[in-house]
Image 1 (tube, chains in turn brown, yellow):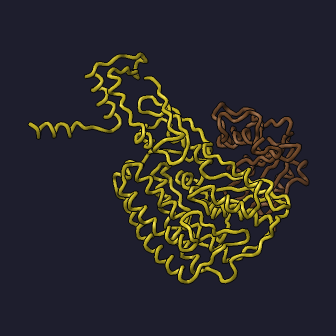
Image 2: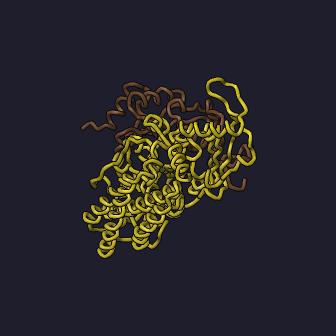
Image 3: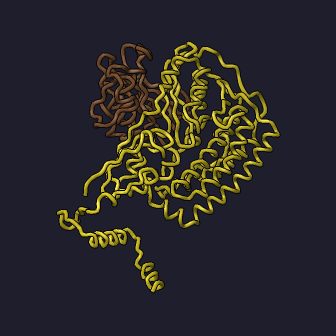
Length: 150
Length: 407
């Protein structure tokens, strides 16, 4: 029987053939798609506009040695979560903001900026989150090489 | 009129937790609000990476003092998914039971605080007295009033005996009666209806755009509830309604929370009648195989999300937590836009300013012509009366009656 999750996977694959072995149904209501950052925007936009993933749960940032990985967790009314995983090089971690799709993403992007040292282009001026104002500029606590007393 | 910026917090006698609000005012109208968070950042995500999974259950439980079970459940669910543990059904039911008891205590607490903020302290005293019933039940089952410590990876640590079940049902009966009384008050008492209606408006579209979750979203007509949409624990086997409302204001949020209380009582009764026999936990490995999982939990304040990545050791590679308040706080600026300062009740209680003594001369900008002009005392008084009449507050009749009475 074709489940909703498999249907979403097939829709993604037929629209973006380069995702052929990159989409995986993890379990009921969980789908993981690994996308190169260059293709991220079109996949993300397609998921929101055509597959109805209209809610953003959050953005998770991970330090994966040579790159900073990012997982955009988006969900829809029926409870299915699409985890779109992408990444940017750790020596030049630059992202484009997604606040044009989800204004709520602002705080999550500030969090990435503070804790993982990702630069987010297009993020409006505003207070930092969550570190204190006098935090040293090149200290990113969620990077694996960061130690509390460094 | 001059714009005034009032800083509230981060340390403030009337704020229960540190957060900093900079309220920009034009007269009594809020024209802008900047929120600065992070004063409570304790680095828990980083700390999780340096502790074992067992230690992390306790650490996650302490993310929040009110919805502690929400965080420990979301965390253990993610770890159990990675480790492919088959949790006994009885454990799932007990987690559900504690989850709903926690929702009851949280919603009753909120109702009291809401009463307090609108000057209705009788409601605070009543609801917090009744809340003790559910606190006693939680203490009876788990040994603690908060930070229950009922979850472990693989199940729960304490069982429900038939005696407990009897006491729980007795408590639930009392609470249900009391909740019906509060619903009666909330829907009939004019003071509450008038004070809460059209205050803190958040339209359906804004709620959607800003990512409101939980009762905040549901009171703006967003029909989302993780318990139904992405069932965990025993919710897939239980019958309950998701309460939504389309008032889009504080009144709607009150109605939603009160309605949810009644649903929680319904869920608890089902849990106790359907409670399956069997063990309450399975043995969990100390080292968790490499993998990742996203776990969601409907906390009293809304969707709570945990992401856990493991690397095969006894410590997680990454733990990410998104609590409901972070999602909801972004709607606050919208709710207060162009509203009265009095709708930010905490401001009145704490700042209590007396500008009239300082400034006895005021400059008013006329709407018709954009020039400012200086008003004399009588003109200012007249202006004030007209301004309040425009807001629907008119003391003319009372003043006339008073004048007649006094001769």
